[in-house]
Structure formats: structure tokens, C-alpha cells
Image (cartoon, rainbow, N blue to C red; front, side, top):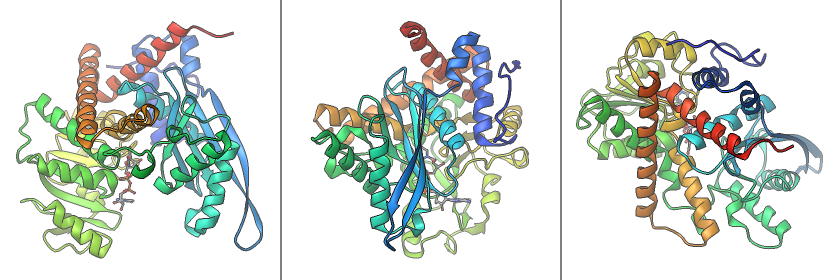
Length: 428
Ligand code: NAD
């Protein structure tokens, strides 16, 4: 099925196989399918608010350095903006804006009452001391204080930020408000309002949609062979949970390379090896493979859970998996999508497959606001309900429009955001 693109121009910072460009092409495709009116198209294509700030930090050396920070509230029609804060040397406003838009669609696919946001600071956290990092975080928070908040915009960890950084954001916000406000950020330590099950949530969500995909395709979970690229939070937890569900993990990799064993790898043993040796490299109970070989290895399910843009027009023709579950954000290029489609490979797209994390962030926000905390079983049960329901809704849209699951997920998301805009009308 083809649709003409209605977007007038492409932003110049994005190349053909850039993940953000790929996302926006899919947005356009879905908007076209929905016959989105031009006015609403223009509204949804533009961020609501983009904040650029200068962050002076007194370094340990006694010198002052000034960092640039961003926060973008892409869309808040369905609720407060939601999205991480990243600290990295190559952060740009364009990237933050694209990621904020991504969050808007992700929250809408799983139907949680959030819009999309994202933040970032151009810095290299590896060369900052803990004291400098804390000062940077607190000043960044103080500068965006009027725009964040439980009802406005709720940040979370992203690249190079973690629970500790979230604790500083929460404390800074609370000091200004003169009372403790736990629900201003998610991904906090459990002791101060974090949610049980948050650490495992993205991997668990991947496991749930993998089972749903196989059920839909009439494939057996028991013994189905899985290759996992990336053995961090998402990849290793997904692998562990899939193994518990009877899947056979045949390949795993991290930045140092991978390992393959057609008879199956023991995930607990791999984790032990990683703990002792930092990387999977050298793991003796399998054959050594590269990350590229992992992607085209003999398996039923491929789970990219490391980086953007790893499945491209170059390697897509050689992929043997029948199902791809996108644990990472943006692992598949637009050109690769067409090849995967032609090969009949069933792809569960990132904005659905890895939405377990933001879903449990939503639970954290709900628990903080209610002041009542759920046990882990409740968190996992509610996560399972949302992931299964969202998979079902996306599949319905895919059948209705005769499109793949990715276009279906965007169509579902844009339709939900557009519906709220229509109901709310235009404030003038
Ligand atoms: P992580 O840092 O815990 O793990 C990343 C893994 O990828 C590590 O094993 C690392 O060695 C590996 N890796 C890094 N560079 C690589 C390379 N060049 N080749 C192969 N492997 C490489 O990160 P994570 O939290 O697991 O996130 C992984 C992906 O999932 C990212 O795209 C992230 O945006 C996405 N994601 C994460 C969450 C979450 O809750 N953690 C939620 C949604 C999406």
C-alpha cells in the first residue's frame, strides 16, 4: 500500500536512514492514512514549547563553565509531557525535539494519559566529578522549574542519567515548592517514591509482546529461538524473562561482541560471566560472533535492544528471524522496513515493544500522587494488561488499514492525539 507524503520539506539535519527521519516518514504515512486535516497536521508536526538554557557551573578547579541545556514539551494535549533527560556531548535541540515527539506517540499507543517531552544537556558526564554533576543537574532543574511538575512535564532518566540524578531533580524541585513533590520525576530510587518493577518493566514489556506476536502467528513459544542484541537493562531482562517462558536464547551480544549457541545459552550464566568480566566477550559456552552476525543469525525472534539504526537496507535481506521485537528505540531504518515487509517478517515496533518502561513510569506517577504503593505483582499484572491490550489494538488497526504493525502503531497514536485536539478545540 502506498501513500503520498504530505510533508512539504525534510529537516536538513536528518539523513535518509536517520532514525528520527525514519520516524517522521512513518508519522506522515500514518497521517495520510487517517486523512488528517492540514491544520491538525501542522499542529502535530510542531512542538508546543522548546526551552534553551545556559547552565553556569562552578567547577572543582574553581573555574566557571557554562553548559547548554534543552527541554522540549512536544505535545501535552493528553496530559503532562513525559520523557527523559540525557547528558551527552552530542545532544542537539533537533534530537531532543525528535525524541520528545517519539514519546508523544509512544504514550498514546499504550493509551496512558501523558504527552511527550524530552530534555538534554550538552556535556560529557564521564569527565565531570560527582559534585559537578550534581550542581549541573540542580541548576538545570532550577532553570526549567516553571515548565516541569506533576501536572506539566514529568522527566525521567535517559542516556547517562539515572536514579541518583532523578533524586537531585526531585529534591531541587521540592526545595523550591517548599514541600516534597515525589511525582515530579519517575525512575526514582524505590526508597523515595520509585515503583517496584520499574527496572524490569521495559524487558518485561518486550517479553509480553513477543508472546503475543507468536500467538498471533500461530508459533510455539516453547523452544522458539531468540537472538538478543544488547545485554543491558532491556536486553538482559527480556532474555531472562523469555527464557523463563520457555524460549531458547541462542544468541546475545553487547558492545564487545556476541556469542551463539544453537542449543541455547543459559541467561543466568551469561549474567554471571558479564558481572565477572564486564563484557560477554570470551564466554566459553558458545561460538563467538560479531554484532552484525547476530542480526542475521539463525533464529525465530530477533530482539535488537542496543542501538538505533542497526537493521538497514544492507543487512535486512539476510535476516532469518520471522519476528522482530524492537527493544531499542529506532533500530530499523525506513528502507529496511520495506525489505522486512517483503520478506513477511512480523515487526513489533519500538513505540509499542519498549513502551513497558514508560507504562510503569506512569504507575510510579500514579502511586506518588495517590501516596499508596502497589506490590510488584500488581505492577506486573497491570503492565501485562496494558501491553496485551495495546498489542491487540495495534493489530486491529493493522488489519483495518492493511498495513504493518509499525504504521498501525503510528496510526493508532496519531488518531488518539488528534481526537483530543478536536475535542478540546483551538484556544485563541
Ligand atoms: P543499557 O545501557 O543498559 O544497555 C545497552 C546495551 O547495548 C549494553 O549491553 C551495551 O554493551 C550494548 N551496546 C552498546 N553499544 C553497542 C554496539 N555498538 N553494538 C552492540 N551492542 C551495543 O541501555 P538500555 O536501557 O538497555 O537501553 C537499550 C535501548 O533500549 C536503547 O535504545 C534505549 O533507548 C531503549 N529503551 C530503553 C528503555 C529503558 O527503560 N531502559 C526504555 C525504552 C527504550
